[in-house]
Amino acid sequence: MTDTADRYAGLPDWSDSTKETYCQIEDDNPRLTAAQRAALFEACSLLALADDLAATIPDVGLMTTGSQGQHIVNPAVAEIRALRRDAMAALRALDLSGVRDATAASKAGASLVGARWNR
Image (tube, rainbow, N blue to C red; front, side, top):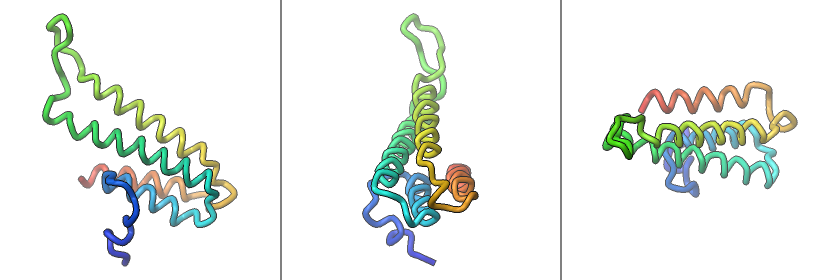
């Protein structure tokens, strides 16, 4: 088994689930083009940003006070959802059909979900 520090060497200071998503997709797709690798990096950057933003919610709470003093859902929730939606769209757009087996995207998605639930 590869040491996690070695596995993630050279990656930005992303969440572990984002680093694992990046590594899993790279492992499953050894023939990524430079453009695909760049798109993967950008998609993972969006996931990392969503994770960073999600980490602030416990401090502020899911509900906050609106401009009129009313209780509203923390605006970060919508931003997190949008970031993750955009990241998943970017991952789907990688078009890995020619460079990986049919289940690689499913494995990467399962890895991402598992990492999120096991925090």
